[in-house]
Length: 336
Image 1: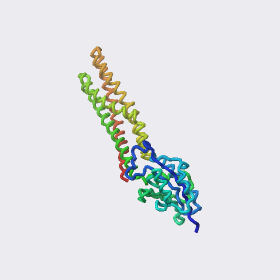
Image 2: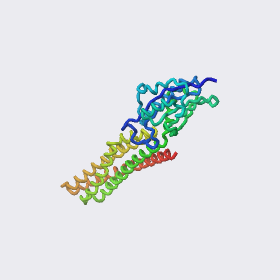
Image 3: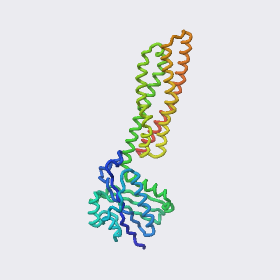
Image 4: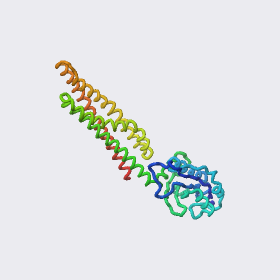
């Protein structure tokens, strides 16, 4: 039986002030500053795989936005233990000198990784544990990787990303819910106000020609609409970017399609046309045309209102369905 590989190199991480992701909070476990010990392996023959998985996990930690990597060479007192004879898999196995060094660097947590080769099942098991210096296990998770795929770079990286997500499942769910709530509020507000505008223009055919004061009520609805439209237009890219940080690509693409539909299929295609109708009605009221000319003008305006509001009604129904389907899928994924 081959001797287990002994690894003692440390990867050092610390969360710098202001760089922790604004949504995911880790205060409950106080693990914003961590050390990642090189993953141990069950056999010397998979030492290279252990090193690769350590590096892949490190990369995913950095990409998560939760941790910032500090240059290892700056921590010579810890690095001095690189060639320790005893394999490290938990806090209690660390020498006192290493613990003192960790405390000096203000680290609250050490992350240990194990790579086990299960020959019978044809899979590798990667186990990662977050353990406080007080020997409390804060997080622990594992993932299986098929033997035939372990040397594939993308497979390893995806596996480490999935493992990191499992380890932070509670925070990720909270972040997803916050993004869900924010996006839902914006979309709900927009749909209410665009429907209000549509109704006002439909009523315009009955009231606006004979009552110029009707434009005051319409102006209020337009002002309310413009407020939320400006939000979608100016901040839509930011909403989408923040959403994409926590939701998968299909959901992100659905949100992108919804925002694009609001800007193009609803606003540019219909709302801007209705604004021209509003201007035409104002001109109608101020005109000095003959009765026959005004009658013709009125008929043309009414025709335009009917066509545009019908088209807008169709687009609103389509958008309602898209948004409801989108939100239902998000709820399913959050509950699952």
